[in-house]
Length: 195
Image (cartoon, rainbow, N blue to C red; front, side, top):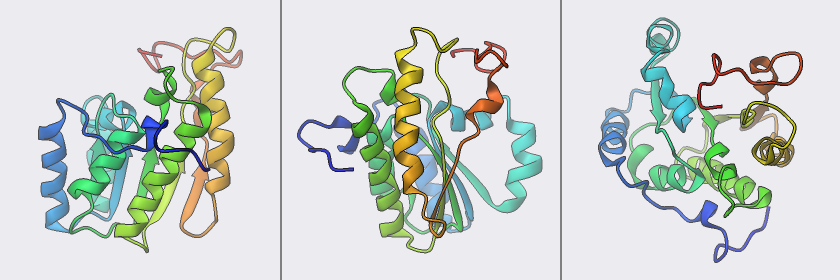
């Protein structure tokens, strides 16, 4: 996906203001060199530290997992984090990456720009840890329903592009978004309170 960096904020690495402490804690985890499974993303990933803590401790922690999720992050923030220490010292077997919904919620990023941002994150990971496999999760559905929902339409279009990043070797694409929707395509607030 070729998009000019001059017009695409989604591929220009930038620190997400106010997240410095959490980012530094990730750098400390990386320096230990123990993490074999890294979850990388925004609030959906970050949520494992809250309501998902019990499941995390039982299921993921024994696999030497690390949660590198920060609420509100966009592709450019994750790219900055990867380029600024979060992969110094670790060589995870797998990175589970889900990012982009916060980019689609703003008008400044097109579908192609968001996909390019995701591609740049994968490239940055592989530059640092070439043998790491990336499980690229589709961006979850946004908003209550399908009708009049530009965010959901945008996420679907991004997913169509990033699905092509699947190479069956180092990048594996997986879409579980439909599991969160009711039969009529609506997204309940019980599943995702902020929709």
